Image (cartoon, rainbow, N blue to C red; front, side):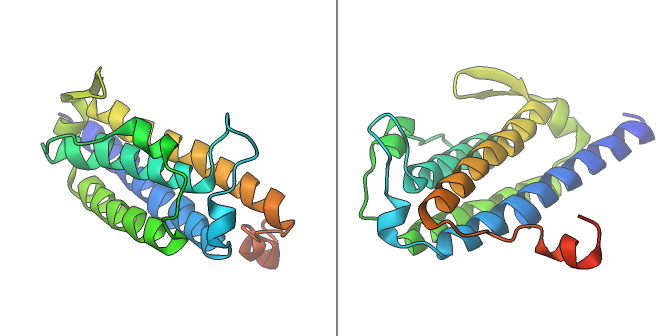
Length: 172
């Protein structure tokens, strides 16, 4: 590895950790904390997922792709259960579980090296590099985070104020 490779790896890992842990996760948590348990499990139809399902799914994905793979742990994920659940798990219990996974993911991202990013892993039937695994989690989290925010705004009609601090500084 060259110094440039190490610098790029460190930048990628730092950005990935900040995106997940300092942007997506706190905003998702704040949004869901404002909802009732009934709203968290609401589905517009049987073909759609509730916020609760999406939280379970994000937890399973991050645990499988980051925590279990990079910690060389057994993958105990049961993906179909994430979508079959209809409640009554409380929003606070869902957020607590996802919060614990996000802390473990942060720990993983904080210790990965360029060697781990180029290593190969078998995850969910795919043979991927460590870089692909990290990118998959960040991209996947962003996708479902957006769905959760959309569902919440549709249910409540409330502006979530995600960029309020930028508007106050004139950077929006």
